[in-house]
Each structure stands twice: as C-alpha cells, then as structure tokens.
Length: 513
Image (cartoon, rainbow, N blue to C red):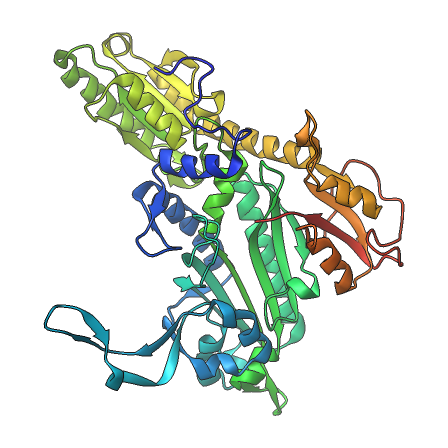
C-alpha cells in the first residue's frame, strides 16, 4: 500500500497543473488520445460518467417538455452561408467533405477519386442551427405547431489547434436543444429556463457552483441576439464555461424561412433558441474535485457509487467472501438514491488488495467497502470514503452500511459542493482599478503565488475596446452576472476598471479554458 504522504498522481497540482490533469485522466482510466490528432477515445469509465450526465440532463429536458430527435452529421455548405454572422463565427473550425469515393492503386495506396467530387461541399456538423432550421421551416406552418421543443444527443466537429482531452477536442459529444416559439417573450423565457436547468444540474449533480450570466456582445454565439452562460471556477482559479443558452431572436428563422400563420391570420417569423453542454463537463468535474490521488467523483454521477472489494487471505476464503459480497451487493442495489438504484460494483479481479484499493481511489469511487474472512464472521464491513483522501477506514455492521449508504453519499456530495464554493469565494475579489486588475492576473515570484488569479468582479463600460485591452493580458469577460456575486470587498466605484468611463454594469473577468 502507498505510504502516507505519497500521492498517486505525479506531478501534483501545485507542481504542474496541466500535466496533473492529464495524469488524472490516465490514472482514472477515463480516456486516451486517438490516432487522429485532437480526437480522443472515451474509455468505459469516462463514458459511464457521460452516460450519467446524459441521464440526469435528459430527465430534466423531458420534464420541461422537450423531445429527442436526431439530425444529419453532414450540412450543405450553402446552409451555413445563409446566416452571415454564423458562418463567420465557425468558418475557421469547419471540416469539409468534397469527395465521396476513393480509388485503390495496385500497391494498395488509396487516392481520392477526382471524378467523385460532390456537387456541393458538405460541412461536418460544428452545430446544427442551420440544418434544423431547414426542417423547422417544413414542419412549422401555423401557430398551432408552436412551441416546437427538440433536443439531440450527438457528436460535433470543430477543428481544434490546441487540443486538451475533454476540454477542447476536434470531435466531442454533446447535446443541443433547439426550440421555436410564436413570441419573443416565450423564446426569452425558454432561454432563461434552460440556463437554470444547466445551473441546477451543475450544482446539484456535479457539486460545482456556477455563476449565471449574460455574455458580452463579442463573446456571444455567432448569430445570437443574446447568449447566457454558467461559469465555474476550477482549482487553478481559471474559469470554465460549463453551459450556454442562446436567444436567437428571428435571425435564424429569417435565414431558414421559418414562417407561421399567426392566430390573427397574419404571417410572422418564429422566435428560436438553442442551448448545449458537452463532454467538457467531465473536464469540469476533474478540475473542480480531483486531488493528487486522482479523480474524486461526485456521488450523483459516479460510475460506481460503492465498490465492494474482497480481501482474501488464501483462496479457501473466496467462496464465503464472494457469497457475502453478492448478498451485500443485492441489498445495496435495492436502495434508492435520488430515484435510481445505487450503482454497486464487486471487484473480483485477481490482484493484490492494496493495489486494487488504490486503483479505486484513483478512479474516484465515493465509497469503498472491504470484506475479508473476519468481516464475514462478524457480519461487518470496512468502509473507506474517497473524500477522506483514500486512507482512512472504519468498521461497522453490514446492516448499518445498507441503512446509511444513501445518507453518506449525500454527505459527500454536499461536502464537495461546499468545498468548491468556499474555494470560489476565497478567490473572487472586487477590483476597481486597472493596475490592481492586471496585478491580480500576473503571477509574481513570491512564496504565495496562490494569491494571484481568480474571478475579478469589476465595473465595465460596455465598450468592446476595453475587452480587447483585457485580452492582451489573456483575460476575458466571462459573464455579466444576473445574480448576486459573493466577493471579497464590496463594490464602491462606478467607473470602468479599464478606461475610467462611467460603468454600464459589473462583469466577471478571469483567465479561462
């Protein structure tokens, strides 16, 4: 077993945060790089996390009236050209299909067949507003067809020059909701409703506190009238955009000719929205909760919430220990946790007990239960909580574990959220001068580099030129909060932190992923 004080992950967060992140992914067996640069293979542990995210969100989408559909991976280039801002925003990220056939030489080499050129190039889906708009135009004829509330679970491709697993990859998995409404107020309400769905999910399931806010004009989704986002602070004090919801106005409806007959007999364009989250959320879980021993999975989303580990002192113990664990596993799976059976795994692999225990520490299982011959005889279990840094265990009656498992998991979930919220509060500051803002985001050669960086809650004049000044420091406006922000210090000034002109509103400035 690993000695106390030594960590499972090297380098540690303090030594090299970027490399630590990659090593956590490897140690937790979540994903690995694919042969195609910028792409990743999501392994069973990582995909189980994504499936649990899907289940929780899908239930919430359906509870708000949305239905799932699927739209093509390929989008005609002309569709993107219909909305000028949209195509400008995505043009540099698009993968393009121009031919439909290969030719093989006698030596086996494959060439693109020059006679198989497509009449029109196809774009590999970077997002689906344009092709879904084309279908909405066919399906919507009357106000009676509205609202139309759809969602799809899909993959998308955005050519990424600086990939990082889960955070930025050329191909990633996501969901994208698309809705059409008869009136502007209905569409705006939908935009805010879905933002709140994301925020509630992030906080209750991911145990990740978020700030709800609007994006500045320069940070909006291409073609949107308004973009809302939830922003979270990672352990290195950078921001992660964890979900977006867009009010598209009638821009895409005009481009796609989504018209309907009103109740008064006239004709109008629909008001549309779109909203989405992606496998980036897994990166958010890692950077919010993981430690120097590996992943710390929030119980609501953990692939295995409880892992049962046989501790054998000789093969003669195996039958009785496994029988005990099988029965215990059945009892635990009968327990309801937030409306779902507990996810319990029995790890019967033939490997040293200490190695197996540390494998599950690195994979972040919230509760580890060890059972050997002595526990079988006494009717007990030995329980370790991942939130206890993976080293401490307590022995208790088997029935007590079954009775208290759900409450313990809730306690771990709450503790993770409160720890993350305290971290954000500690590193969010009211900053009202340009010099202090730049100083806040400039690492110093001191013995306390942790005092630099985080969220700056500062007045802003609304001018994009000031945003450009901040970007020179690799700092951006993450959002314009629509809620109260807890920060060190209290807002006093009303002059823009960057130019000194009158403030229009307060913004969250941060470095980001």
